[in-house]
Length: 498
Ligand SMILES: O=P(O)(O)OC[C@H]1O[C@H](O)[C@H](O)[C@@H](O)[C@@H]1O
Figure (cartoon, rainbow, N blue to C red):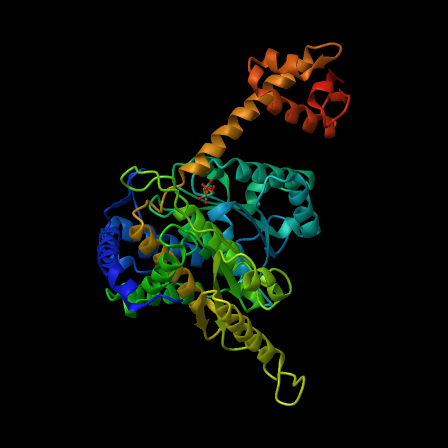
C-alpha cells in the first residue's frame, strides 16, 4: 500500500479514538445504538472478559451443551428412529446463519468427516429439491439444524417447511431429526419446542459475527472440526489486536490500509484472493461481514455518508485466468488482498520439473500477480498464514471482525445494524400481500381482464408492474392463471383464471 508516514500520523488521533471505542464496546456499553444492543462477539472466545456472570453463562453453558450433544450424536446415543446413527447434517439458514458454517466446512472439514454436511440457504424450490435429492435415502439418518437468530426469516422458515415436507413424504418424523439454533423466546424457539434440542443464540451477537457462537460451532463440531482450536485462534488474535499501537496491531493496520485505499469513503473495492482452494468461500463470507457492516447511508450523527466497501473475489491462481486482466490493466478501482498459505499440505509432492512442485507454482503465481499489479500502480495487502487449520481460521475471522470495528469507528458509523436489509424485507412482504389479492380476485373473475384493470381491482393501480410480474410468474408455474398476448408487452396481456 503506497501510503507514507504523514498519512499515518494524520490518522493517529482517529485510531486513538478507535482504540477507546473498542474498549468501551468490549466493556459492554451499548455499541449498536439503533437496536440498543451490546456487541459481544469478542466475549465468545474469552468469556472471562464478559461484563457480568449472566453473560458469561450464556457463553459457557451452550458450549458445554454443544460438546455433549455432538459426542452423543457421534456415539449414536442420540440417534434417529429408523437408523443406528446420524450420518449427515442438513443446515437450514441464510446470511449470517449460513455463510460462516459454509466457509468453515469448506475450509476445515476433514476428508473422512464423521458426518457429511449439506446446506439449504435460499427459498429456491429447485435448489432445495436438489439438496434433498442428493441426500436421498440418507434423509432418515440426517440431522437437520435450523439456524435463525430472529427466528422469523422467511427463507429459513420456507426451507424448514420444505425439508419437513420431504421427511413426511418418506414417512419420517421430522421432529426426531431436528435441532434449532435461535434466540430464546423467538418464534423458531417455540416451533422447536418438541425437537431433539435447542441451542441459544445470544441477543448481543449479530448474525454476521456469529461463526464462533453455536451458529458455527455446532455444525463444525459435528463435522469433527476442533472448535476449541478455532476459539483459541480467535482469542489469540483478539489479544494481538487489542494492543493500542497502530503499528503492532494487525487489525488496525488492515483498517488503515482500507481507509487509505478508499479515501475513507470506500472509493475502491476489496478484491479477496486466497491462493488456496479451501479458502474459496472466504470472500463470500467477508462480503457479508464487510458490506452489511460498513454499507450505511448515515453516520452516527445522522449525516448522509453512503459508506461501504464492495467486496468480491474467488481464489488464485484460478482468477488470474479470468478477471485479473482488468485488475492489472483496466479501471483502477480496487485494492487486492492476497491470502498466502505457506504450507502446501502435500506429504510427498510430485516434482513436475526438477525441484518444482504444484505448490511452488501456486506460491510463485501469487508473487507474480502481486508484482505485476504493483508495477502498474495497483495496491495490495498480503496476509500470510502457515496453514489452513482451525486455529488460523479462528484467527482470520477475529482479525477481520476487529478490522470492521476499527474501520467503523474511523468513519463514524454503526457497523452492527442493517436497516437496508429490513427495507427490502418490508417491500417483499407488501408484494406477497398484493399476490394474495391478485389470486383472490382471479378466483372470482370469469373471462379475461387486462393487467391495468387487475391492478385497479387490487386497490393499487400504481403497482401495475408488480401485478404484471406476479401474474407472469403464476402463469409460468401453472398456478391457475393463463396469459394471452405478448409476454414482453404488459399492455397487450389478458389474464384469465383456469
Ligand atoms: O439469523 P436470521 O435472523 O435468520 O437472519 C439471517 C440474516 O438475514 C438478515 O436479513 C440479516 O441481513 C442478516 O444479517 C442475517 O444474518
